[in-house]
Structures are given as structure tokens and as C-alpha cells.
Length: 426
Length: 157
Image (tube, rainbow over all chains, first blue to last red):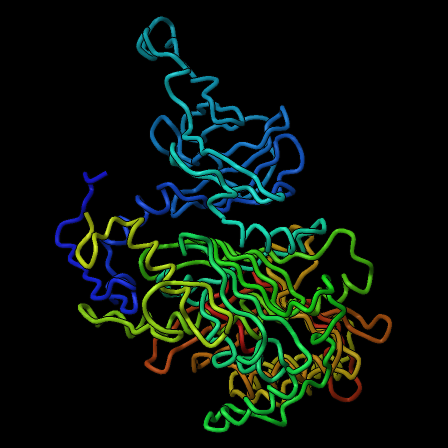
């Protein structure tokens, strides 16, 4: 693993509890290469696709693990498979389309033929032509194959990893997150659309953002204006034992309206405060809940690159796909429920206005990440400051006025990357 | 082209005025381009081709059209950019059921305050336009080939 250890990588963490994060982690190119190896190709589960996206034998869809393109498919035997989209001959991308159905996979370059598991089935001119050329006599088809991923599926979510040794998926997620996934996926889901958002920032700025309940009612004035998440709501941050996965919850309670008025006082210093602001057509707020349990907001962040969320009554999966140290894509899978009646299905079309790249709430998160990225670029040797909610041990929080689980992310990140104490990576 | 001359000119004016309104950041006037009973949707080409129902922007009432731009002006944080909407290849069908079917291509360019220009979005407009003196959109469906949005889509396409 140390063979590609970058030279000159000297990134220091001045505090053990990750209340300071060195800005280099957001732009250093050597560090980014190391992340692709240790995190995305390391012992972590990456979300790949939904089982229902490959319903029939031969169906395939493509995704990314880090920057490695991966094909997820259902074999002719009905089993789900995944392999890296890179030919075992000379490295060409084997599957050129985003989605489709295939009886087999032929590399366009030299027509090497693979089955759905990625096993090599045929090599044109293997025995040569007219007694000349061809592969060496000792070549065996079984000696080459597409790189497979180990898979586990939970509630219709397919996860994959390139690592040989990894803990079981539900242990990796942790009981807190499993419980929330069970809640969100208690009904059969129906994909309503995909959204793509390209953000000129480092992927970890989004990992911070989705673990940060402090920003939500401040950056997103829409949240406060319509009581979706306010700092006074019941809720908090709840993590897995390693601190890498987090769930933000915000739950409505009868005191919300009163607390809300008091809080509005705090916004009077903000020139964006608009107490009189109201929607002309308020049908996107307060739709009949898909789960009638008072939960207003759930943001699950699963290391390294998955978010499963409910914002008001809009449900989504967000897959964060790094594209270099200063660019990532958010691939949104917006879903409703297969057993929904007409009213609920109609509500979901209007609720799309809340989420995605044009979402009244979520569009601003990319902008926040972009603004940090621009400023961070010149800050080598300096640190961001993360003390909302306190210092020291990373523990679950029963308040939304904190950013403690960012430190959970960084603690785990440091371990996964091999940062030794306050020093440089091993 | 058998559409009556006055109607055709009103429709061409609608597209030119629509582009000018957005390019000049005159957001509060944008809903005036829509009829009282109207629909405005922005779909990605990806979802459109897959037959998936969800739009990125979905307004099925004039109130929702107004909300799109009032949220923009009142609550949203987004980068200040200069915009150019270039609308071309406008094809107008005869009036049918009180409306003309109109298709067009669009290209939206963004330039930063420091003057760097990028293509932001390209695609097509599928519209139903009613003409009563002036022309207005009864329905404007934007299908963006640019399914991957550069950061965010705050200003309508």
C-alpha cells in the first residue's frame, strides 16, 4: 500500500479531537490520489445502485466507486453482479452506455467477450489465423477477467467494495443508521427521477455539509421561513460507533411555533430575514406525510459518499462522486413510493422543487462548498475551526445547534488515511 | 407558415422579451410571460428519455411560477452571474385548441463578474402559446440536454 505514498505530503492536524482541519485536505492533489486508494478502493462500502434499477436478466447500469467506473448488472441467472468497466486486455471501457440490457459484454476495441459476472468467455483469434499469430499456447481464458466487486444488498440498496477484507454491511452502517434506513424504506419505493449537480469543490466539503445541522436554518432561509428545520426543533446528530456515519434528525413538536418566534429575533441581524415572506402557492409545504410520525428532516451520511435523506416530505438518495480534488458530482435519485395514491404521487412532483440542483433548499449546499473551496486554495498550513457543540470526545448530540459529527467524520478519515496522531500519513 | 402575421410576430416577440427579461435580471416580471392557467417545467434530457416523471423545476400553477422568482429574490444564496439566453430555431404551428405549439432551441451562457464565460445549459423549449394581442405561455416545458447542472439552477431557463 505504501508504494504510491506521495512525497512531500506534509499535512498536520494540530488537535487530537479534530476541532481543527488543515485546509490542504480540500485541494492537495497527492492527498486526493491517496484517498482514491485508501478510501474509495479501501475497506469501505460504496453505494452502487438500487436492485430495482436492474430488474430483468441482462439489465445493467453504470456508476462510480471513487473515480472507477463500475457496471452493475443482473445476470442471466438472476443474480446481481458488479465489475469495473475496464477491459482485462488493454484497459478500454467495455460498456459505453449509461444503462441498458445486454446478453453479454463485448469490449468495443478487440471484441473480448465477458459474461455478466465479468468472466472472460472468448478472445477473437485466440488460436491465430491460418496457423499464425494468436495468443501463446498456454493462455487460458480463466486467467483474465474484469475486476469484480464484492457486493452486499440491504433493503434494495446495492453496496460494493474492491476490498477483500471488509466488515459486514449492517455492522459498517451501524444500528442507528440501519434503523433510519428501515424507516425510510419501509414502503416499496419508486424512482421518480435522477438529478445531477456538478460542484466545483472537494467532495469532503459536502461530507461536512450533510453532517452539519448548524448551517441548515442559517444558509437555507427557506428552512426557517417555512419551519422545516429550526434550531429549536427536537432532534440532533446520531452516529455509528466509529463516528463515520451520521444521522441528523429534526422532529416537529407542539412548541415549534412559540420557539420559532423567539428564534426569529436572532435573524433580525441578517439582511436576508423576511418575516413577511410567504408562498403564493403553498402546496409544497405541509403535504400529507408519507410516514406519519412527525419526522421533518432526516439526513443520513454514510462514509464515504452516500446520503439518504428526507427533507420535509421529499425523499432522496444522493451519491457523491469525486472528480478530482476540486470537483464532485451529486447524483440524486429522487423517489416516491410504489404504493402511493394519486394525491401522494402528485405531491411528490411538486416537492421536487425542494431538492436537487434547483431545490429551494439543497441548491445552496453546492454554493457553500464552492465558496469554501475558492478561499481554502490559498490556506496551506492553516486550519478550519470546528467547535460548535464543544471539544473533546465525539458523542451523539440531542440538539441541532452543533457540528460535532463533522469531527466524527474527520476522526475516522484520519484513521482510514493512516494519519498518525497529529502527524503525516504513514 | 400559415400562422397569421400578427400572431407570429407576437410569438417571436414573446421569446425575445422572455430572454431579455431574464438576462436583465428582471425576475419579478418573469411570471408575466405566463397565462393565468399555466405550467412551467424543467426536465433533464436523461429523465425525459427514460420516461421518468420528475422535473427539476415543477410549477403547475401561476402561483408556483411567481414563487420560483420570489424565493430567488427573498431567500436564496447563489453566485452573481451575467446571463445570456440565446433562443433559436423557433417553429410555430397553426393554432389548435386556442394555442400554438412552438418549439425552439436554447443556449444559456453564464459569465462571472470577473468576465469568464461558460456554457451553462442547452436544450429545447416545447411550448403552448396563447395569443390575445400579446402572446403568453400556457405551457413551457424545458428539456435540458445539460442534465448535469453546473452548481445550481436558481434563475429559470
